[in-house]
Amino acid sequence: MTAPPTHPDLAAPVRSAMPGMSWPALPEAVGLMMLGLQYQFERSEWWPPERLRAHQFRQLQSLLDHAAAEVPYYRDLLSRAGFRPGETLTESVWQRIPILTRREVQQRGMDLHAGRYPSFHGKKSEQHTSGSTGMPTAVLRTELTGLIWEAITLRDNLWHRRDMSGTFAALRIRQSPGENAPDGARALAWSLGAGAAFVTGPSLVLRGVRPISEQIAWLGREQPDYILIHPTILRAMLRDPEGRGLHHERLKAVISYSELVPAGLGELLAETWGVPLQDIYTSEELGYIALQCPDLPHYHVQSEAVFVEILDEAGAPCPPGRVGQVVATSLHNFAMPLIRYALGDYAEAGPPCPCGRGLPVLARIVGRLRNMLRAPSGAWIKLDFVPMEQATDLPIIQYQLAQLSLSVIEARLVTLRPLTPAEEERVRDLVANQCGASGFTIEIRYRDSIPRSAGGKFEEFLCELDEPATPTAIKAL
Image 1 (cartoon, rainbow, N blue to C red):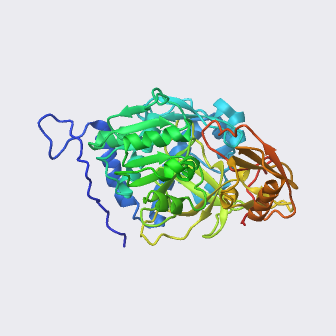
Image 2: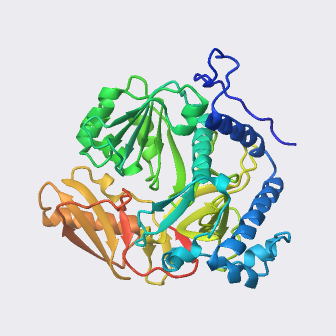
Image 3: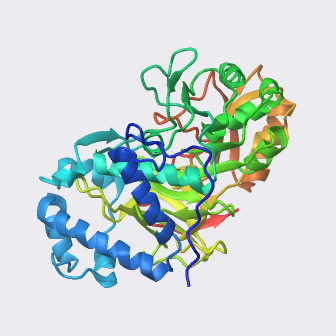
């Protein structure tokens, strides 16, 4: 038995493109595709895992048939794995396909580009990733992959029953035309997909590199119903006296993206602004990977768009409760197939969700090795810490911890003034206690500023040791 599809009441009516016909509405082509995909999503999300996987393998079969014929990199590679175009793709053949790393994407370049792809997939474009792993890459996308992105965005809004008649405000690091203006950029709809299917309220975008005080003032003036924001920017706002005191007339939820959610941020948001935090897990190369369950804190893999594997250090699937490497395949990118692509992220596999959805569960997103501590034994340890929050009386504006070797952690500090020797010792104690790093030397270095990555992410802990080329075991501290 599968749970029945849910149809949440929507304050925003369906958009009609037919003059004189407001109800029942007849949207234009993109709107019809959005509604058609939502109709299918509302059913497939309740399928049992076996049925979902069978449909995914049908799509993977089409993707591999295409890659074997049109992508130079995959012609011999798939053949050596035992794949034969036209033959049914099996689990054993799939697992013999080598994992694709970021470094290989960089090195192979155009060998990963398809010579041809179906014209109905639309025009292709090149997307440059941020290089938050230290390895920026360039990926081709098609209009079809953009359509799937819009459909999953709309699904997220429907899952969380957002009132799309309200105002949606985004604070983004990357700059688009108009976003750097004092009042940002404005559009009539929340997004292309939502606006094609529904009559939504407006969307507003401000560039998130502006001073926190300016961003807080902008939110105070605009009074949005929903905010999309990096978690570290949100936390800075909630720590700021002006941010803590900001009066929100209509705010219903805050949506976080792009970074890991720091421990305690959801609770801090609820206490300060009185609204929930809803997170999304995306990749610039692959698009949406998982959305937070509308009923529980964990995440549901977006199986209609991406095939995700959580693999242990031996390359075997992780059981629930085990942390492993995220390996994912976009089901619909025929311009540049990324098959069994290792993003560099780690996540914990979860058991089936009590909500009844058959979509696979990620209990938590652990992050990248780049943001984990490497113990002297060589083990990688996931840290859930906010060390400087325990000492709010210290004159620290910004901080970053960097592991320089198996024995040295550097505390990079931006401060209102140099710390006294006693205060520096407090910082060392905080870092050592939170990191479990009693065997480390804690060095303090003062900085004028600590920049974000090219993609706008801020890394509170940065391991500057070389990463292993294969999946590795992760421990939680």
